[in-house]
Length: 84
Image (cartoon, rainbow, N blue to C red; front, side, top):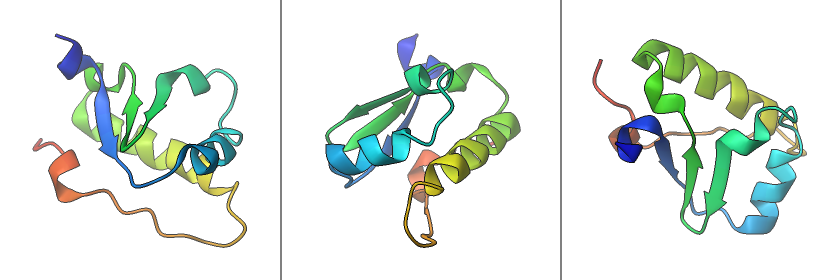
């Protein structure tokens, strides 16, 4: 089902902030991330193993963080981390 293929990340972020962060993603990764108000959908990530999901998210969020003017902590809500 579609819900299992994709990972949803809740966010208070507004679209202009999202566009800024997305600029730092490599071109081939951009289609994986779909912004809508209140959430970002990471397409296809639910199809890989849980530990690989986390590794990929940490790497991709790290790339996005490069767009920010100063270091910022990115915290994932506990509810979005599936049990292994």
